[in-house]
Length: 133
Image (cartoon, rainbow, N blue to C red):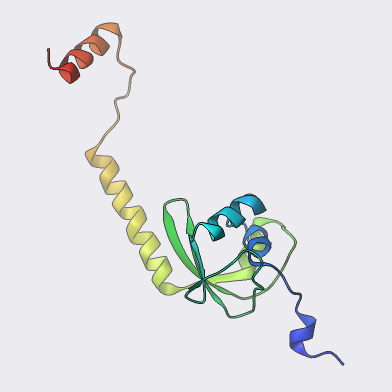
């Protein structure tokens, strides 16, 4: 009879991040790990590090920092619904993400984009303003 540890597959960190759909490809996951953008249990990890259930992973996804706890281990990339069952995001991470997204919405209000593209006359006027004429 096999113990629980023997029953769980051994999966590399870069492969697990790819299977959990944090990164689109394994090479991007590997680059992020090697670049120091991923912490495994509070320490810098290597792409070949074996993932264990209950481990805390801090990662950078786009401009957003996330902290997740490993719930299941899989080396197969499946649908998004299945991938979300591989991890649980911590409460602090959820609060930080909501606050960050709210700040981005507020910043967008202070820097509105014009509805139309400027015509030739308006572009020349903008260039003159930028060049100081």
